[in-house]
Length: 116
Image 1: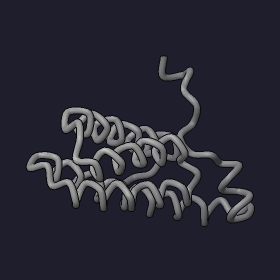
Image 2 (image 1 turned 120 degrees about the vertical axis):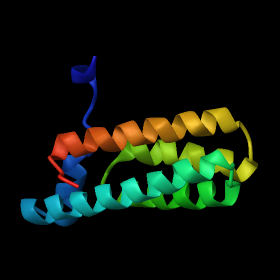
Image 3 (image 1 turned 180 degrees about the vertical axis):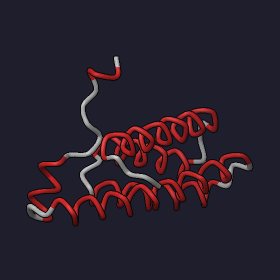
Image 4 (image 1 turned 60 degrees about the vertical axis):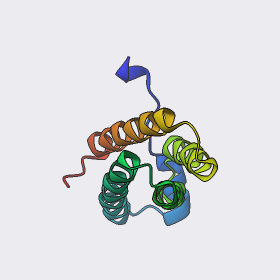
């Protein structure tokens, strides 16, 4: 089933936005993964105590960072998470979304060969 998935990073978007500079794009993706992992750790911690404000903030930041690198699926998940946190609703779904986001970031690490 994993082979049927679309890549999580839109390389055409990156190339159109940042030009044909594979080294720069790789560095950008490494920074993105590092930032996403830190935000996910903060999200996981905030979900334990249901710190809605922190969840909303981290989801918002992850949404923006994902948009900047063409990670549309992660951007959409983060948007949903942000909306749930703003409404302070569905704590179980919030935790599920955080888990899905963590799996997606791990998949990006594999796709782009990021070693962080």
